[in-house]
Length: 253
Image (cartoon, rainbow, N blue to C red; front, top):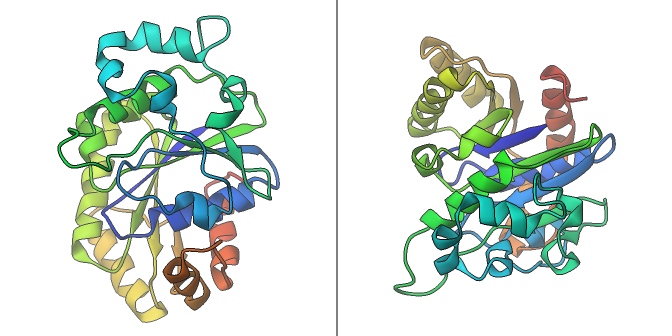
């Protein structure tokens, strides 16, 4: 299964991605794809070495659109059709202590180097052509907002996990994601993150009025906030159990 983790900037998509990856790694072979062109913290909080960006394997961002989808698939696959992440060169895939494998699509770091369009295109092509074994699951930590919708990245996924923090804007964006994904007939789940019990009840009521079902709640966790502030391997308290409850609720465990 391929799951995109989406939401407004600052909702905690990377944290939710790492928590989910850790728990799912008990049952599956987990790949975590970093498709956020801006943030760079994911390897640090995952506890994995930083692999080379996959875009470099294909000659850099300037080569992506020139190559086209067929050429990208040929370059990334052994047989020329279908891409298996296990077949990627080792320098482009790293591993956490739990065995979670990390792939980074690419980053925009320099003034004037252009937009993230080639990176979104690479992510879409990769996901559309991935070939997974039954024991493999792919989580995609997406860029903030909904630009990936405009780039049709979701075409290659099976499900979307929307992350909302205690803001009206995050719920509004989650509603947009659900409405846009409905024609694609993909599974859609919503998790409330960083919510105290009182705030969570308000968010659930507001979400219900918007036609959104809340599938799980991950509350405020001081251990997570401190480890993210330090930029070190993610530490979590009650959030791990709450994340596990969510994954059970959506039948991934």
